[in-house]
Each structure stands twice: as C-alpha cells, then as structure tokens.
Length: 468
Image 1 (cartoon, rainbow, N blue to C red):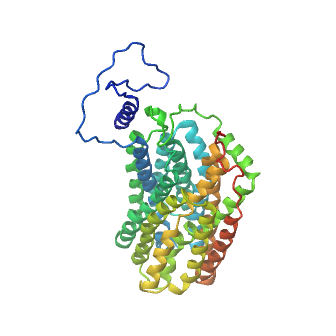
Image 2 (cartoon, one colour):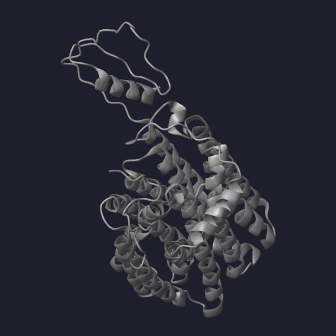
Image 3 (tube, one colour):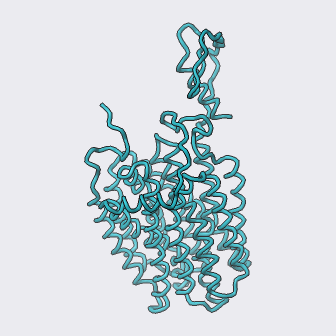
C-alpha cells in the first residue's frame, strides 16, 4: 500500500549509515536477524524523490466525504416546511417538532456512537448510520400523517446523522493525528457546510421544479453512494495498517472497549462533576440554537415571508456554507496557536451582533447588506467547533471524544428547542423577529461563559504524561 511504502522509505532514510548500507525498517515486535545480509543502497543521486501521502490524510478525506453524504438530509427541512404545510396542512410547529426530534437525537446519539466506535470499529458504525439516514429519507416519500414524519425524520434520520456527528470527526482526529489536530478538526467540521453548499441549491431547484419527494430521494441516494468508500477505505486505527498516527509514535491498537453504554454514562457522570463541562455544554447549546435550530431551519421560510423566492433564499444559505468552510478551517489554524477560550468569546460576540441586525435586512430581493451578513455569518457558523474540541481534549484527555459527544448533545438540544419554538413563534406572532433578537442575546451570554472557563493548572492535556 501507498502509506506502507511511505513508512518504509522514511525508516530507510533514518537507518541508513554513512557506509551506503541499508539496515531496513524494524517492525514492532520483530527484531532484525543477527548477521543478516544487508542489501546495498542503490545510487539515487540526481533522482527526484516522490514523498507519498500519509494514510491519515486518506482516512481524513474519506471521513470528509462521508460527512457530506450523511449531512445531505440537513439541507431539506428548511426547504420543505412550506411545501409540507401546503400539501398536508400541518402547522409549522408540528413540522418544527419533527426537526427538533431529529436534532435532539443527533446530539444524544453522538456520545454513544463514539463509544460504539471504540467497541465495534468506526467502519461498521458509520455504514449502519448511512443506511438509517437513507431509510428515513426514502420512507418519508410515502408518509401521510405527521406522526410518520416524527418517526422518519426524527427517529431514523436523527439516529443515523447522530452516529456521524462531530464525535465521529473527533474519534478519527484523535486516532489518526497527533500533529495538525486543530487544522484537521476544522477541515472535517467544514464537511457539513460543504454538504450544505452542494445539496441546498440542488434540492431547492428539485423542490421548485419537481416537488419535495424527488428531493428526499436524492438525499437518500447521496447517503447510499458513500457506503462503498467507507467500507473499503475507512480504517479504524493506524495500527491496522502498521502505521504510526500522523506526527506521532507507533502505538498498538487497543482491545475493543466493552460496555459502550456504561462507559459513555460513566464519562458523563465524571465530567458533570467539573465546571468546564457545564460551561462548554452551555456555550455549545447556544451555538446550536443560533445555527442549526435557527438559521438552517428557519432562514429560508423567514426570507420567503418577506417575498424572497425559496431558490434565492436557499442559495444564500448555501453561500453561508462556502464561507463556513473558510472560517472553520481558519479557526482550526487559529486554535493551534491561540487561547481557545478567547477565540470562542470573539466568535459568539460577533455572531450575536449579526443576528440583532438580521430582521432589518430581510427584503424581497438580495441586496448588499444581506450579502455582507451571509459572508460574515458564514465565517462564524461553526468556527466554534475547533476551540471547543480543543478545550475538551485539554480537560478530559482520552475521554475527550465521548465528552465532546455529550457537549455536542447539548448543541443539538439547543438547536431542537429553537427549531420547535421558532416554528411556534411564527405561528403565534406571524414573524420570526423575536427569535432573531432572543438568539442574539443568548450569543452575548455564551461569549461571557467562554471567558470564565478555567484552564488546567499544569498546562497539559488530560492524560498527557509528565516529562522532565
């Protein structure tokens, strides 16, 4: 394999002596036989050497594509609120409740999924999750009652997408990377925005031209297409390929962790006795309320209330995805270099200010101030993820992926509450304005909460050995 060649080449370069002889790499657990004949190193002077890519980057690429395929469904709810209301007569509160169930299960499933990946492997868990998303999206084509919407969108899709939530990214990052963790976290977090960029305009066009059912079939197929790549290329651990993680030393693959549910709950109980957990959970709940629960679910119908065509509003939401990618990757780069707490405070403060201005920007046509908001908000959309994950890793060490799963659960509970209450507010007040203002105030609170998170006194990540 390509990565195996990389390891052999690097080991050879390090063990070759000045006498031109090659000792060859020594695999873990195997010693070179005494007196073995050494093969002379060929003369490669003047030959340009090609440095292959470490397999960790291939795994990260597959993870990126997997998140895109699994997140395709997330582009649908905001587009289908009005069509479902028109066809079935369901209230926006009912439809919002189905979306809120999906978001809540998305978050509550994440910590258990991280533990299940330790028990059964990443590949198996993700394949089953993709199947659940496809099943829920396809089954919704034949629904006739709102309770079916709750099961298909809420239960099946929520469980499936929750198993591929950010805890999935955290697990891959923790296992395969030692160096560049912040950058990789930013890239993988941006995958969800990339899915939004790809599928929002496509699904909006399908809904406008052919109805909502073909759009639901499209996202189901997107989830199924990813399955072969996951099964063939997504390795569970670097040791499976005889490799060290990128930027780290070789470690044997740990034995499967039994008692996944018990471990997940134990980690929650242990973390819940610490102050940083509640501050991280609180800030991330507000993050979810102001992004997935608010903008992703209610921006399109809110813009449509002001006379903007659905396709135009969906395109603006997709543009948020473009700048989300830039902002999240840049945030990962910043997280490797600056205090994560201060980064979070800045992100939430800026987000809150932008939401306070949004009601004044709604209009039938897209104008420059709205474009400025879209760019500004897009850069800040999930820029909060890399510093939040970094703080979890610093505070909770080996359990950080599961702790982050619980923090993500709070993110989705916050999103679920606002997805439901936003629809209720629209039914009661006839406008979304009160929701925008309330979310802006919550973001200001999150900025203050981020600043009071205490760093570890020893300055080390939890679980890091003491040296010197």
